[in-house]
Length: 122
Image (cartoon, rainbow, N blue to C red; front, top):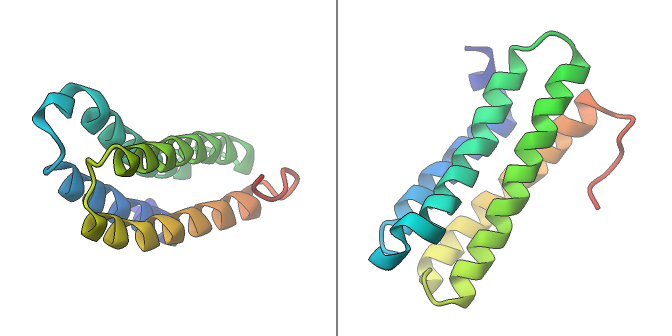
C-alpha cells in the first residue's frame, strides 16, 4: 500500500502501538474513558494518513492530514493528562514521548509538503 511508504504513517503507527502497550496498565475504571479515547486518537491519526493518501489531489489529502493533526493534538493532551493523573508510569512516558515527538515532526512535515500554503504549526 502506498501509505506504508510514508514516514509520517510509519511513525504514527509506532505511536499507536506504544499507546496500546502503555494503556494496558491504566486503571480498569478508565477502560471506557481515557483509555479508549487515547487509543482512538492514536489510531485515528494513522488512519487518516492512510485514507487520505489514496484520495485524489493534494487538497483532499491535505484535508485528511488536517484531521490526522487534530487527532495527534488530542492524543498529545490525553497523554499529558494521563501522566498528570498518575495513570502513565514514568517509564512509559519516557518511551512514548520521543515516539510522539517524531510522529508529530513527520506529520507536520508531510502536511507542509502537501499544503505549503497553510504554513507552520502554531
